[in-house]
Picture (tube, rainbow, N blue to C red):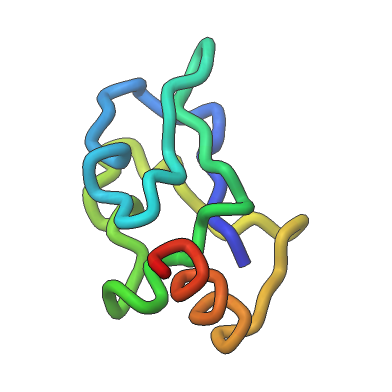
Length: 81
């Protein structure tokens, strides 16, 4: 499952630097996460780093992009091949 950034984003940019897949970028009113690149940090860390650094608790799982841990790991390996 990819993560998503909610309207509670304070546009600080902390999350962008933490993403090992460069899946986070600035949008018009908040940062956005590209679900094609988000692996919830599977393959790089034990938990999503963006969630840990977000001061506004604006990052949550995206129910529209559900994936198994195995699929997330395969995606991570494909991104970093």
